[in-house]
Image 1: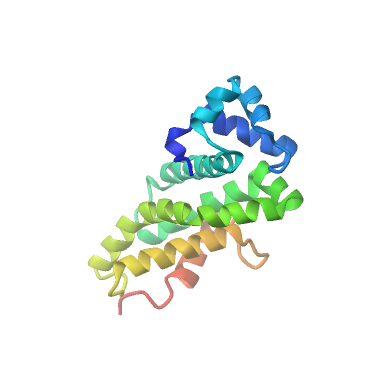
Image 2: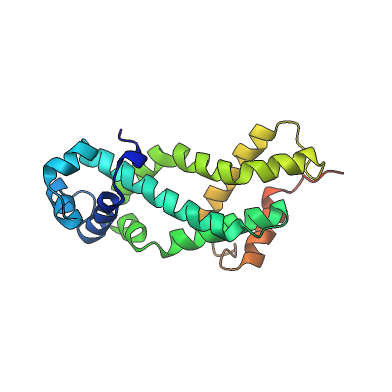
Length: 193
């Protein structure tokens, strides 16, 4: 599989447009090359297959969303505030992502399998954002966990799960609702006595 950093942003941007327009199954490499304004040969120098292109595009979108999350969390003063901001931005971006939502409606089998394959990459990005403040909270005695790595992994998975699996009884539309989820769902039982 091609590493996302090796793929030009205009290629992944073009692929996203084509996936939105034609779907994954019907998008050709020619479509993407035309949309990107490059030759097919240039495209194939960056990605070897449409499958690589799909994964590179998913990873590029994950990096874009992570950049938005980093901006939103820069002023967070506590770990719960930071986690709430992460959840809020991820949930909003996923809920409003036109191409993703269209593909989930029209080609769920195409997109779900690929998202599952790229889940470890996304979790690593979330863990990189959340890991340092979680570890600092554990070291400061604010969270009671003996295994910081397991805690970071758990919280990262929960953040992704809540962001992806929207429910009518969970308020992800406000930062207060996200803070409530973080405090009462994710970190329950982890507060130091």
